[in-house]
Length: 256
Image (cartoon, rainbow, N blue to C red; front, top):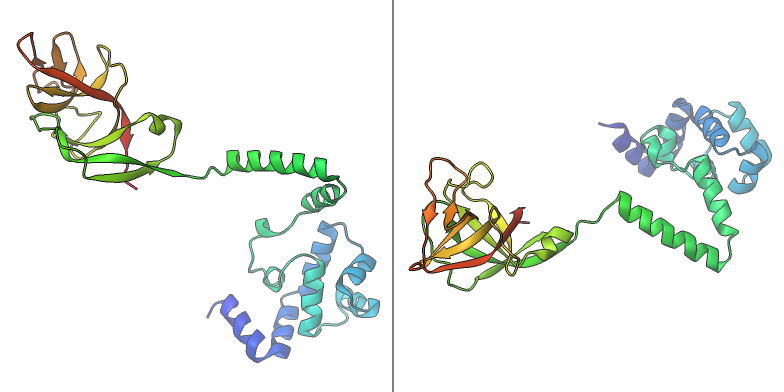
């Protein structure tokens, strides 16, 4: 049985025994260390905990080795930690540091303008350091475009898929699945690619093309559609052929 579950059972069923176990884990040493970390005097701890000074002094000095559970909880509240913190069951990074407390004190002394300014800066920096992965939807062609053999791309998409919201992904208009291996190593069989429908496709760009009724993902050449896999020959086209570009391939995406 882990320490946490022992703690929970003892707290619910045997609070006095629980208090003894906490003390055996050097509770007085922990609260002294925590008090110093916060720059808090014993008198300040007395004031914040609401306990008699004699009670707090006996605990911090180690004279009282068996305080009541309610006393332990009051001290932990004053030190802005939990009983789990005092037992060493909480990672140190989750505790409020002295510098954080100083920030809170300064924040409380600001006027409404200053608080709004700090809130705005905090929100910007929080999003920078903790980006939220929002999702967007795009039409998805379940019928794959070929990377080696022709497949029709003249049916409307039957579903939508979610992809991560990024500036690049917002440019895309639809998603198609690659079939075959002629575009290896950049695109493999089964890869999903995002396509910008109205983008300008220049020679050397990779796009989705419909050649004589068959759809392909290829690199545009001069009078030809080129495979990246050297084992596949280019598909040449001339004035008698029907060629349509359905958009520029932006990137691979993952289905969410």
